[in-house]
Length: 245
Image (tube, rainbow, N blue to C red):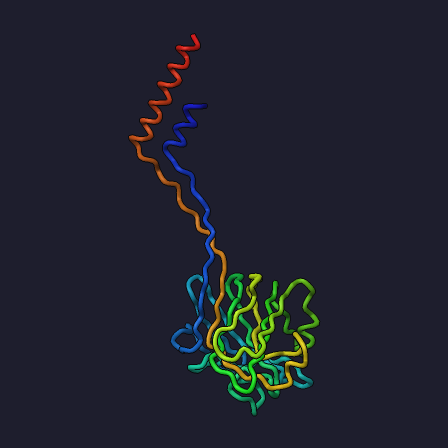
């Protein structure tokens, strides 16, 4: 048993699993960064960064009695914006007449940690919600219904208040999710006092982090060194048996 153990150690080094934190930055200011840019209400923008794939869609409470409906996500050199189904809607993510929200659907869980505000007008309060499971948009739901349907402990809400333009940091605890709602401040996920002034922004980019695990393959040891180790072990065992006799 001793000899076979030495042979195994000498010939093969064990594989190792290594976890690394990957930080990804998504730039929404150039149309060439998107792999797909369909148009119209309910459209989806697709963008990738490394191993991450992100689908972006838009919603707003433009229906009767404030019901949430699909909207159109679009972009310009300032970043992402929303055209909702209100004909008087401006080209922002705003909460003027209705509350616009972007829905981020990643292919794996990430910690959304920063937003880059490319343009702000009037006010720039925002809200970000991360979900442990995909939120439900059932027919005739309002933003209030969506907020009330969220089970305690399955989501986290971040408020970004009066940040202006540029990068805004949050989520220092590193909450991770595949599903995120990002929009102009929405009182149903926070406080009505921050909707006093209309918030109008364009989203130039986001930053995320997530852990990736890689496995290093076993490495074959140098053959002469392995044979030398085996020979030394055999001599040691032979000498030990002579002494015992």
